[in-house]
Image 1 (cartoon, rainbow, N blue to C red):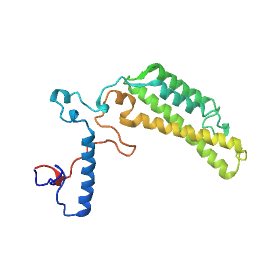
Image 2 (image 1 turned 180 degrees about the vertical axis):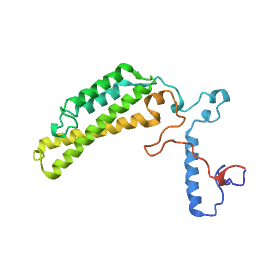
Image 3 (image 1 turned 60 degrees about the vertical axis):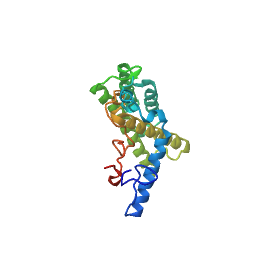
Length: 221
């Protein structure tokens, strides 16, 4: 048994000079031990030839994500711009920007009708431009609506109109955020299908999710 290991559990740090650090390390090792015990015994010691195939899901090449889910989200974001009053529209006439967005969306659907697996710089830029147009139009409408509420102008005195307009802007904002995350998570849908990135994204604030490294005091010599 290594000198850095505790008497009860191999790999667990023994004596730590700092009690708080020791308790933190103990908690980490307890979680690692529970995780290891949750793995079936037959999978813990895979043969070398099998281990080559036992790669994480995010590193496997897949057939690509289905197109229809994101198409429905984009269509909903475009349609939600119609109930917004013309005074809050970014571009006049009010139908011009939704039509332009719909044309870009149709072009993307034609390029990848069933699954998103075609790697193309133009298609990626077109997808990002579509989401940017939706986000910009929605941000402009939200800003104008706030200005009208503060100054008590327009139709803000009508509760029904105000709720419909505000609800449409809020739902569009939620969809736009989901689309942005969908486009940038691990490089986008095509990069995810081709397993280009070796590690998955954990959250919008962290770029990679790497395996934890044991503390130096707990490593075997």
